[in-house]
Amino acid sequence: MGQNVIEISHLMKKFAAQTVLNDINLQIANAKIIGLIGPSGAGKSTIIKIILGMELPDSGSTKLLGKQMPNRSLLNKIGYMAQSDALYEQLTGLENLKFFAGMKKLHHATSLIDHIAEVVDLSDALDKRVINYSGGMKRRLSLAIALLGDNQILILDEPTVGVDPALRKKIWSELQRLRDQGMTILVTTHVMSEAELTDEVALLMDGKIIEFDQPEKLKEKYQVKTVEEVFLKAEETL
Ligand SMILES: Nc1ncnc2c1ncn2[C@@H]1O[C@H](COP(=O)(O)OP(=O)(O)OP(=O)(O)O)[C@@H](O)[C@H]1O
Image (cartoon, rainbow, N blue to C red; front, side):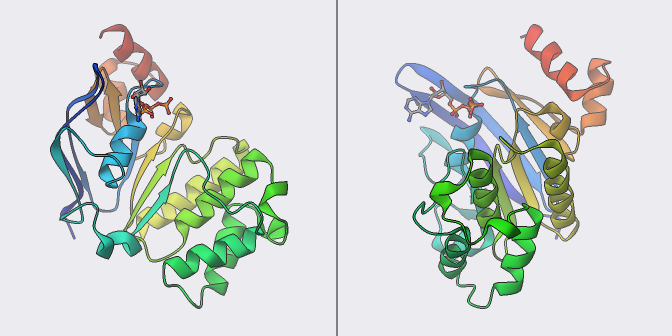
């Protein structure tokens, strides 16, 4: 399938007098990991919320798998992890996973849940109530929930905040494995070493996507060695 799975056209969004998104265009092909990076407050989460139909743009359109969002028929095809955790704190990790698996109509998900819990390193904490989880454990459980199901698209808003480097590496190999199986993954991050692991980086600054290319191509263009330096140089020249 060579079609674009995420299509963003001419998005505009203001909050009161503040223009946050000023003509955002992004076409994301199938089976790619796209890193959406930009300074804090640039509008990354706003783009994600508009893509998912949780926030309305002032103008412009977004389509997932060729369909306008929100669209109930697509919910089973999209995994989403928000920046803040939406978990049932009185339930255990396992009960949370089972609940969300049920929402996604996955009724025989035991082996899937086992695998996902192992990926986010929560297998030993599944019987603990979430209220007793650390911040990082809650992030990992939110990621596990996003990974549930037969997703074609995964949208992750800062999935590795509070996650230590070894586990971060493991999570990224899982994302790459899912990409290799055909999943399209849009991920925001402040960790520039993670941006190096993406297939393409979209750099959001000043309300616009000012770059959208492979990390290597961006480094060549800016004549620097890291995506972090691309980010800093781009910010300087704005
Ligand atoms: N509902 C809202 N009402 C008013 N302003 C908002 C609202 N949502 C976002 N904003 C503003 O829009 C701008 C972009 O916010 P957004 O959360 O999309 O940025 P971000 O790039 O995801 O930031 P961060 O990297 O810090 O998470 C910010 O200035 C924020 O204060």
